[in-house]
Image (tube, rainbow, N blue to C red; front, side, top):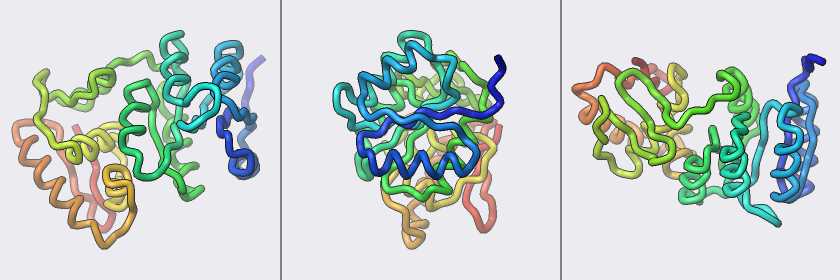
Length: 227
């Protein structure tokens, strides 16, 4: 039977936070189930993979951590969208989660409006994407190798440049604010540091000077990657 209502599985061992997320998401019109253990989350999706449209997956979980759970799903050929929830400042967690096959991540604490925006963006994407790469124009993100290629050749980037460009690629065609980019790459959102983002964008443009794909400035907002 066709299920019209979008259903989300929240995997979060902090039951107070899980309950809060469930309440807020239900107010937005989503159906929500919660589990509090990594192994139970892995089993739930493996057995009922058609029941859910998206998973909110915490990294630090009892039983089995979220990164290992996500990797196990991908190994089984389960490609429903996964939005990982990470501790602020844990850049290594973020990289590991993306390498494991997560589609996006959000650092705690986060604004609920941003969570909803991320969920909507993931749900708009093509379902069941069995991709090992993400392409935008002549740029390719090797998801498993965590390398960005320009016309098949690796771009030599600093870690922060990589994280900024990777985020823009994952949000191709979307206007991304400076604060969002700063929060992604530096794990902290503060408009007073927006010049740091601008400097890295300038450096990236220099390295992309031979590319057809470019970073467009959106006046008063931030930047957008366009092919």
